Image (cartoon, rainbow, N blue to C red; front, top):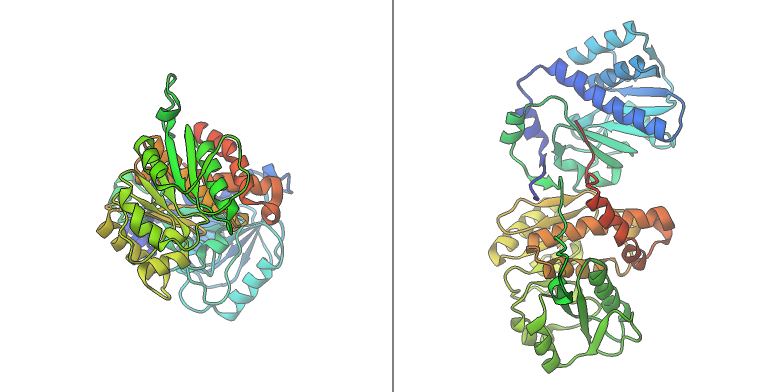
Length: 478
């Protein structure tokens, strides 16, 4: 289920595509980029005018190949070549483009196709590249990057100077790791994966660093189930200081399919939704509830809870989700648990002050394997680590999700899928994906500025419908 599209280093991609008909690859890649551009122009009712931004390598050749397909479809296509001396295939397709009526320009107009660097970005950019990329970024024109936005390092995701701020990126064959780490994701825009003719044998032999999910299945709904079979979730969350966290986690669990949710809390959390059962902390009632429950979540809005964790976590023999202040360095979590830290909480969990992303990911992999837990590293994008699994990246969501309570909603969702029988890894992948899609719907309704965590819960039905209708998590251009 979770081993979908491979994510590789640029070195691995170069290895697997080293043999084969490179001109055929280039023409097919260009065609797929053109199809994405055509769809965008039609969808937004824009003039059929495209400018190709052409560098000196094969990425520039891909741009000319896209231009050829666009010319064939009746578009007005201009090339803005930055260099006279270019790679052989680039030069060959430039001449084909010229003979087929393509024009050359030093202006940027219409929809832009970024074929400046792709994965060929190494170190600092020369002055004319920096100037053109800056001009493009200030133009407010739609930009479609081929493989990876120019200026982003294909494997590390680092940006030394400037990078194309893409409307969309059409990554070729296999997604590159640099799209998702360090600064990479900031520049990608909407992500597409395009097949350019690489054989299935070559794809199979490629060594993946991570995966992107292809297709996810929701837990089956039995026609005759009762509420306990739908899943009874018990939580310990919320306090007088943080009243909303417990309510949002509990409501999110209900909205994600749990049949019943009881949240224990410390202090006074005020009124709650009538569907949600809440109880002041009571050790006796807690133990009684655990006997009926199928999943547990602990942490949202608790504040300091070290003593409670040491005293009561060992009582949990069920699948558990731990968030916020329940994430502590010295804690031994039950095997099969899901931990949901953001970057800062992950550093605290691992006893680190700072770490580069590669180091943080390596530590997360070791931690999950040693402790037999799943770790959801929340961010843009979110990474999911599990014992004996390659990490999974969820390349969806919206910046407006960076709002108080968003993580509490996710915690409740993971617990709900646990309660419905999903494994820890499956529950995490499902919940993070649906959470991200709900964020996108919320941003369309409210804008990224105005959305709140409650909007995520309100939009969960739309996210569930998207999966039920088998919407692609990452659009694939076959």
